Image (cartoon, rainbow, N blue to C red; front, side, top):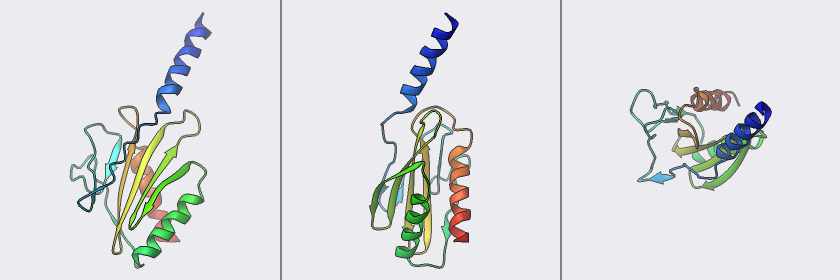
Length: 143
């Protein structure tokens, strides 16, 4: 009986975590969208402290920066690049165990990279989106 409960709970959790609802806001008036009120998002355009993440400047052209981001994304096995257009990238990251999906957006203006990363489901992401963007910033600076 106990194992049936856990299997049912696991199945429901797995189905709800593989949500196909895209939360990427895209660009609006040359900006990425702010976060909602749940602590599972970071955005360089959101000025609230708990959601804000800083931009990153590189001494490369906009095209070189986009190419660099795409190379970094393609090196990973947990991401699918959904949209690439002038100065903008939308990618979906999927966790290996529970298949949680996070929408990550990059907006490049001149030599500045803006970021937005948000979980599709759940209330808190336990800092995963902030950590992901910090790692990207580190890799972009190194490579």
